[in-house]
Length: 124
Image (cartoon, rainbow, N blue to C red; front, side, top):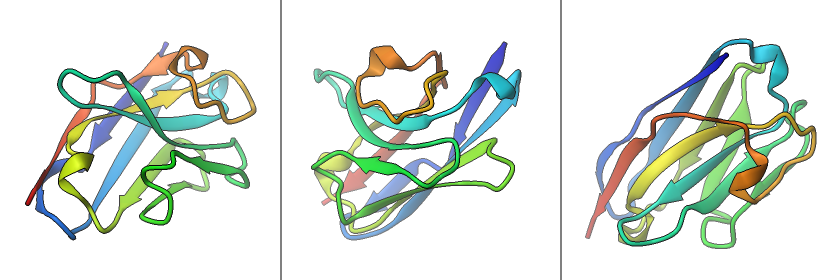
């Protein structure tokens, strides 16, 4: 089994920054690409960003390009999401996800493991 534990969410004013972390434990050798998704109330889960196993390939959703940065620890078991210039529309529960695919995928069904989520609230 694989466990993904997110942390770093919270309340921040518009224009501020937060860094989310996702620590993987258990059978981490089965995880290759990892990603972040978010879901706001009444909306579908949205792809935010993804990173390949090596960290050499990163992909971002259009709504966060230029503001968010995804990275991965050298041990490959922790993924970070640095969120700058936050906007009220970034308010959502953010989920970490792990995939058995080597390529970065943007569709949620391509991910095999999910964390419980961490709330990010951006006030105006």
